[in-house]
Length: 90
Image 1 (spheres, rainbow, N blue to C red):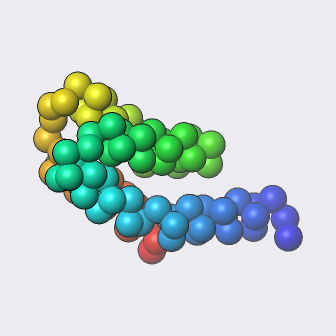
Image 2: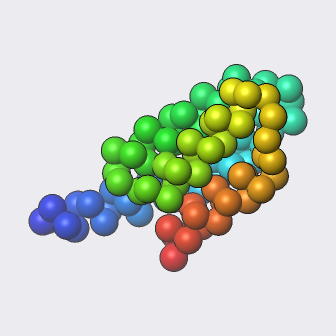
Image 3: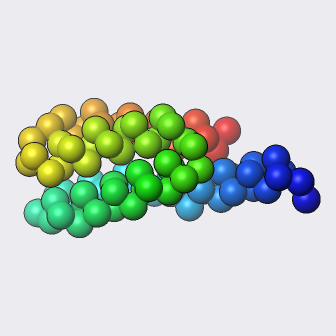
């Protein structure tokens, strides 16, 4: 397996594993645990950065900032994150 094939395999696994994260983050917010929601966003941000998945990284940066500040359009940010993760599955 060449480097490009390995990278594609890693990307496919990344998107498959993380497609449920927006729902998990939403549940944490709804359960009054913004720290857990921020931790999940931070973990996803780091993995996205490592794999150079810049759209996911940027979206999680914005979401993490909103969560830490305790204010933001969570619905829009989670919808954006959900969209970019689902696009990665295609």
